[in-house]
Image 1 (cartoon, rainbow, N blue to C red):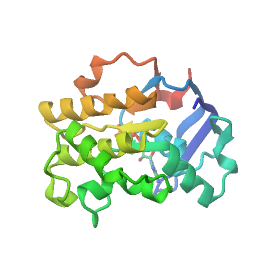
Image 2: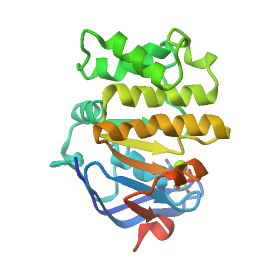
Image 3: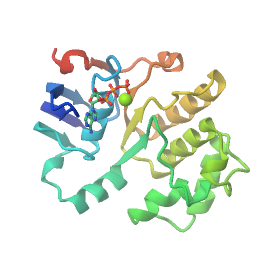
Image 4: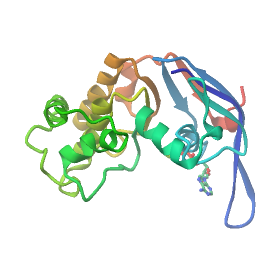
Length: 222
Ligand SMILES: Nc1ncnc2c1ncn2[C@@H]1O[C@H](COP(=O)(O)OP(=O)(O)OP(=O)(O)O)[C@@H](O)[C@H]1O
Ligand SMILES: [Mg+2]
């Protein structure tokens, strides 16, 4: 699915009452199956843009189209469903479901969106194996290392075969070896033609050449 960001602006009010303009009239086209790298200093709006793309927050102005859908026209329920079906996240701070085991975390989003098939456990096991988490399927997320948790988040995306992957500093706070294995797991998403949008300072990400790089410094103005 192509993603089209047009004239998107977003400001926040700070505690002191000042208005912080984060994104200003941002335009980006991300063709289906391509890789977009988001750059910019800390605070430039990379996470904000990813939250807007997933419909978690609304822009003040502008439009986000994913495929032929303008996400601002969806109701909250439709947005949740759209997200569950199409968007996979691997975030700076992990978003695993803590009351559920590793394997349940892998197939839970597919269960929510009603896409679960009969052999889902087998498939989830296979993917956990691919990302190097064999034997951890029954573990609880809080017993895992940070790198292992990030790989569960990647396994979940691989399981759901999400069309769009938002990866926001997915290897932050990991050592080199763990970063590499999270990165390699993430790159498996390319096998099913996912569109990948990522922000990362990690050198493992230099291995890929993004189709496009956008800097959000100065609000993303080009
Ligand atoms: N809900 C909010 N309320 C007020 N300010 C916010 C809110 N969310 C983000 N901001 C501010 O917007 C700016 C952009 O934040 P954002 O998290 O998008 O930056 P970032 O580019 O992802 O930075 P980093 O590289 O450190 O992750 C920051 O100055 C942040 O403090
Ligand atoms: Mg961020």
